[in-house]
Image (tube, rainbow, N blue to C red; front, side, top):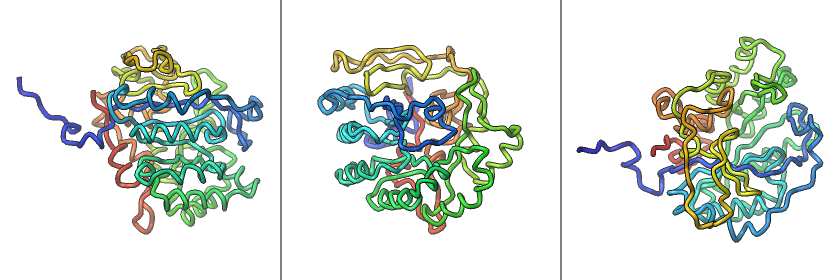
Length: 343
């Protein structure tokens, strides 16, 4: 039988993305008080930071390329601020040391963590990126706007990738032009816009008092590929065969519990029997979620292969081309997250 070569077969192994691991940092503490955040709504922002025992001894083995099948894209995100715990720096360092590509979701205000991370080897920094959540009103209230954008400039100078992302809320509407202007002046392009969801309701609807048409008209002003794609599939149940649990998965970095997806089946604890192979198992057509609200990551990376031809890439969700021709993603990062995961 003649085997037809796939796109991935022509890529060097150093550029192939094997899996996407969504790593949850179990932190609810935060130094900001954004009213649209459920951590603020539930009064969890002052919770104590968790303790991560012996991370430097287990992360590299638990997430080795051999165990995961190759080089992975690992996303790190907390319910609160991801970079508050000092252990997050250890996690990032060990994942980069293992050869993976790492994205960190952060509000960009924990300066001392960037001081630590930007001292890592330059070759590692090319595989490191920051999703800089832009909490405009809170940064303005705390007089942190200048510091926030200075951090972005440091990230870019160090050779890392970044993306600036705004969670649209109705209170931001009078400030849209100011938000666009400050991003153009300091990041070279207008920020991306996501789609906020109401976590207090079962079907996780859009978080807004506007009608859907009004909401789309308002936030389309940012010409964000991220917003355009998310809103196009938001609220739609996906019925195709999903490889979450194999191509993509979620893991609690505090406990080591690996799951297919946020509400998917528990697979195993990757910190126990640390050299034991991981038993991947796709979720198939049995997704318990009402809709794939993080489709911009999972589906753009290829979790449902039947959608690949009509789905943009994850690089499209994160990159911007600046007025001077520069881009938010480095060529190395752009090539890596511009792929679809293939089994």
